[in-house]
Image: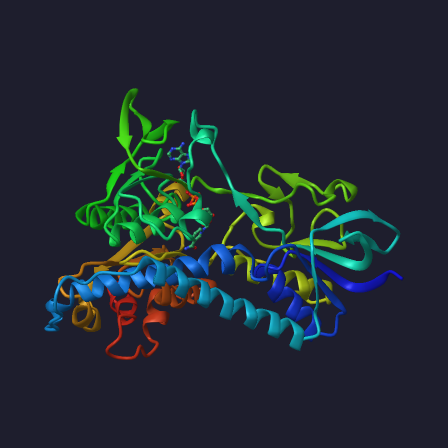
Length: 452
Ligand code: NAI
């Protein structure tokens, strides 16, 4: 017998599992198909494992710097990489178990296996998984993305790492060449630099961290240059061997020796092997096309998360999944991308939301930049001996906040406040009137706004 559902979701990452729990809670009979572990790339081989490793690296750095704070430790602090990886796996197991329990508590049916669409009838979508047929009135595609491997000469013959292998290695290379100075590249550069690996970051653009505010990205690069990372900007990797990568910069070739290569040049949407052709969905260059309700060109098929090839962030994916479920339940919710925070979990962290200074210049409308060094915050000074950082806020000609960019801990936690200000159309004056707890690093936002 074919079991029929109100909603079938393919892919159990952040978009899929949040949407599944929400839909089931609202009374929809929901099935979630997942071919690997629930939690997706984010939980199993992305956000959570990297942040767990980075926390170990940060702890090591704090112990090494303890004497700055009057704390004396004996000997040379060191680490046990095997224990770091085992702890990371324990964190992942705990969280995936939590998600499975959450889905079960909401009555979501989780079907393990690779699902594909086999056809449609007047009001149903037909799906097969493990050779079993299922039907559903609505479908939500949350199939995520995969690492892009660039066609670099010799690369396919090398035992290179992607982020997946870099998260699992229990041995350290003496040196590491990272191809791509984006978010993944920088987070792994930070981790391996803390553990004493000689790190090279090769980025073909003039600055690291593509979409972030350039001033903030340059500050992070300066910080990590001081910590010993070698950056090669405007440099393209054109060849790879087991011992080195060959880079080309301004027409000149140079060999950068490295024991290991990490490839982090971006991700692409998973849209093949799913039977999407049976739905005849409109696609763009890197994913399934959706409208503001996350509806694809088929009115009963929605898509959320990296498969849309747009924002490619777990937090965007979660919100997109919510919007899709709200819409199919008849709600008026719509997706907005104007205040999506971007965070890089280096040490120090960097974070940004809304317009960068470069965006504001390109928009060609009047704007102002308000900025203050992080040491204006008493709490920042107390907790970051000799530390530097910046809070930069962009306002338009009506003094409305349109962007905020931070470097300095805990930028990842503070950026939400600025995102709320942008989403709510707050002005510098209105948002500075809120009472900010003292002493907190968050007060830097108020202090910067008061420059208006
Ligand atoms: P990315 O798009 O952030 O950066 C890739 C970089 O590689 C670009 O700057 C590009 O110019 C450069 N590049 C491409 N080909 C190159 C070549 N041949 N030689 C030198 N440089 C080259 O991609 P990344 O870092 O792989 O991340 C993938 C996705 O995962 C992104 O969408 C990112 O937002 C997401 N992500 C987000 C995280 C976070 O929110 N903290 C953490 C990790 C990933």
